[in-house]
Image 1: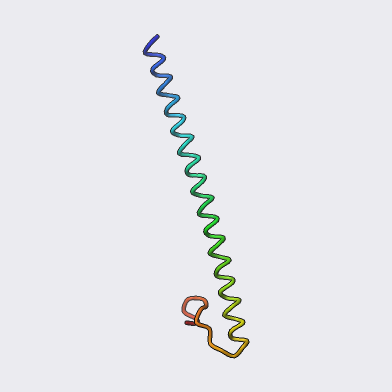
Image 2: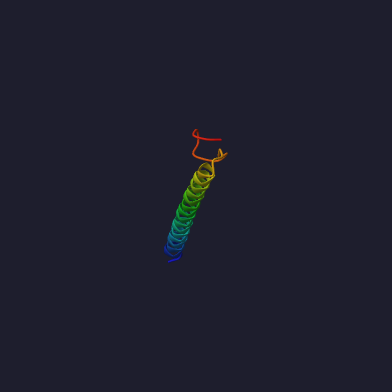
Length: 69
């Protein structure tokens, strides 16, 4: 009766919370992957620019940590 219906409502709430947490976690993972990709591209662009500056005979101020700058 009444007690059984309340139990089912609690189960539904727990399932909805679990699904919401799963969706939030998946979104977070995707965002981190996107940021990681952006960072990798920025590092590649920085390295290419540093190489161009060296080819022009100058000293780059940006480059891999510890190597230049």
